[in-house]
Length: 429
Length: 167
Image 1 (cartoon, chains in turn red, yellow):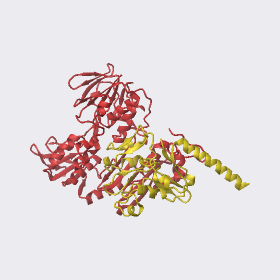
Image 2 (cartoon, chains in turn blue, brown):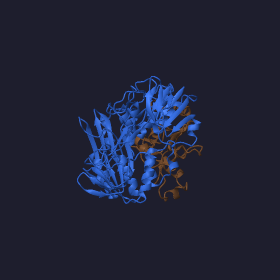
Image 3 (tube, each protein chain N blue to C red):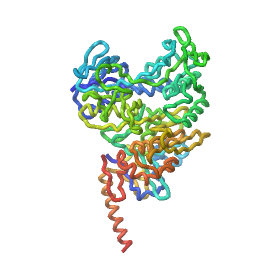
Image 4 (cartoon, rainbow over the protein chains, first blue to last red):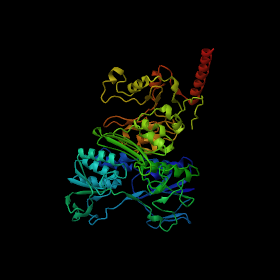
């Protein structure tokens, strides 16, 4: 058995562990576009701030690949897949055969699509290499502009602010985190960031990057010129799937995965930011490009590649972060569009906000700012799709009476190995 | 694996377990000093209660823990040998991802730079201090089968008591 894995981040790494949980012997080859061992991509923020060294970011022990019998081909890219021949072609024209293939190639930052974008000083914020280049340039820079008010952009801006640079976040939409949280949380978080010295300007975009070889500023679409030495592009990501062209592999938003993370080819699996899966809440097909999803998908795909039959329950859009000591967590659907019921609680002066969204008696979304401890319970309720119509207010107050939740959470990850009222001991899985 | 089990019927909500846990995870390991520590030590067990019910909760060391998948720093793992869900506190970057997915809401973050913490089952102790501190026997430390036996005994005794009362 020869397993081939494309990609060496959360999904690829968990793919290895998934395979090895069932098959200790099969050969594993891993093709990695980057030349580092798997690292915590989300922690490039911390690397940039300076609290973490490169080694701190490594996700596994040095001998992980060796121990797991994985042959790593670093700095290589797959350019074509031949599903009928069961081969993958690399950039230098080498064809690598496989019996089972895991596509975990991730995603790349979208470009700004403006003149001058190639100038030195314009960065995506995705890889350790990006962070290293930004770090180098930040040493002699005074001001950074961040384009895009998503989590990536804000994280980069946060790190650069912590490094002492002046930071301006330029957002086209009327608010930051428009795809992560709803208006109230967005306003609260933006206010907090501004109080901490990050300037946020909405309704604006870049028209041109100014300067010679190196950028010296940005011309905005209102005609204003802003001096800056660094521009971070945080306009979202698109899945890396160009190599599947002509292969017959089903793609849509991303590479289409079934409930077992299989593509339309029996022996080709997909996981992570390149995988399109069913959204647990909406039921629609989508890419939830999240660390949590990538790890779970990678592990599940790996198990199935090795002959297991582990269903993937679906992904859920969910994010958590903390900026300057203010945490927030969001999950699922946050807007009332079609008969959803909203319950919310605000303490704006304290930067506390909580919003729960219910539909047909079930919790389908939650956002918490400031006080976030109970978030996981909401997540469990959303995932289990339990009816909670009688508990809406209690849930909002963050008051969780486990007596009432017994039936709801029973069996969830081995909860209630204690004895139920009829004397039954819930069996440990 | 040996774990902490709960007989909720016996929990009075006195929070002795919380205090014992906080002391155990303090620098001084002494109540009189621990209450003056800055930052204050954090209890990994929490009693949830209302007028009628109380239940002490702590990390259940789930068989397939969501927190392991959620941790963006690679700081949480499920130890195959011991069954423990292990937090490597020095890796924590306070991203709250584990808090986001823990179905029991038993992961806690202190103020500012402190890492996320949760029950580690007090590996170096024969019996975890929270269990020792429980005055009513609501907390039990051992194998699932042992707990089941104990519960059966308690239930039979309860039935007998009930019969005596009605008789």
